[in-house]
Image (cartoon, rainbow, N blue to C red; front, side, top):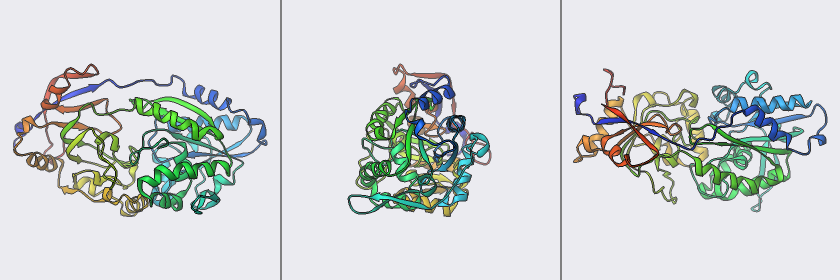
Length: 418
């Protein structure tokens, strides 16, 4: 498609999402930690491990700083332990760099970061397999699990992404992450709860701090859960998280343009619940949205070359492909076992070439009738762009505001989408 006048009109759309931000995060963290009843059981100067994962969680440096400050103020010695399985290339240096890219440093959180790939066995599963956790966390005087509870990108169950997964996959390092993922999505669903209970019973976990986010990815709640209550309370928080998560408001999309993907956005690079694709053998695809052609244009810098999940797209660009770090990418993808998501889509030289090809693949549907949606990434869905065919179907939606002006898809001389 040559002249830019031939591209469809795109309208800016604003979506009203559930908004429940916490007004004072430090006060909330202090109040929740004060509810833990057993502070007197810890000796003065006790070393307390605090988990930090690899996701881009809103306000996570601040939350961790508040946790560490509260521990220091009570006379303890906190330290941060990376809890991210095989992410960061499954190396101490890579995981430290990943935390730094998320704004988590000794300076920002007020505590040292101690990374290790060594693990200790803390029990055996019903099948006789050893259950392990990070050695530094296990040998600390106490362990506080900090993590966000949300819908997982690979499976459905009462416990998905959250504190239990942080303990089993995150603190299990590459060894346990690989083992659990070897059973596919059913293994994640069934083994995380089993392994998590064994870890809770045989490790120094004091309590969990569960983080919930609203539709705008703002911190909406922080909840202290005593260790013995985590398996029962986390499913309730998951149901809350699902009710307020952001989604695309349309059912059918001809072309979905995702400007960027990344591990800091979703464990799958793009949230599968947003794009409507799991691409896991034996797992039914989401009912909505149904996307015919998905284009991903770029990879976030915070991903450090790990483009796990790029295979969920149909088309990508040379710009994204040039940023791939094979060691990090292959390590994370092989650990997950979802190799179909690691297949490189058709690589187009530019954004324009990718979009032109997608439009041709829609034939005989004319470009002006194509249902096209353009989003920044799957984490930010408040504002997006949609073609006239999509907008016409959204006009009666009370949660949608459509901008008065429209402009056609346009490109810079080098083919970059403007």
